[in-house]
Length: 372
Image (spheres, one colour):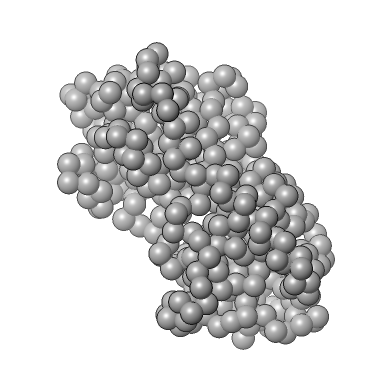
């Protein structure tokens, strides 16, 4: 099979879609598939990648990139093209087409979405998706949201869950200090990892943490994630309002190779997000043996199962109480660690890749891989 695979902006700090793009591609190659990589951005992802000049930002990808991808894909006479970015710049591509849409966030929380995100979801995707052969998403919650907001029938959408990468494992405390010092992190601490934006509910997390400080000042709060001015300003303002400057530490973006240490050294991971298509940091924390408190809404119960304490993300006191429970009860913390490690093992990128290939096979009407 000859197929194309789009990578977008992987030269920038990769967020959830970037992680999905990289990990899925690596696992597809592990199954001996060798896609032609169409690279939108500065990174030369492989020696033989097909670069898309001018497509390193979304407006370029959806305009010049549409033509460039179509011309180059058609010239190669590809059987199938997979876009894992959810933008679907495939109007002029003649091959079979598969698109991954991770969530329906711009519909569910439009006030927290950028203008371009809303334009793509409200005006572009409804027009291009009827021409797409199959859509992949990453949770049953996302599938339900996509069906509700976009012109797609259930049978056209396949769920392929994500996974924590192999590097996410418990790291012995003897190996932690250099990485913690590099990121100016002091133990003991509570950890959050993710983007800093309204839907992540960090303002309420800070309010809950302030309540926890009334109970005990032992733990600092470490917030890992790249800061965006207009999205993260309310978080910075809340830190000042609550006078938490001396106990809340923003690391900024941390490369994936360092994250297992930050997870492993934390006494608790808290992820009270208001909306997630999947919530990969929850699995990453579990894979590192860190107790987890997360939201009882959207896809997060689907991911966490019975391996985390689930709370109402709108209830500040409930978030604070759950954190206190874990930090004050060693037996509960140990139980959550063991449950989390077992839960994380149920998700692998190899499974994700094989489920993705089944989508390719259904679209093409033929078998690609030999039976296991």
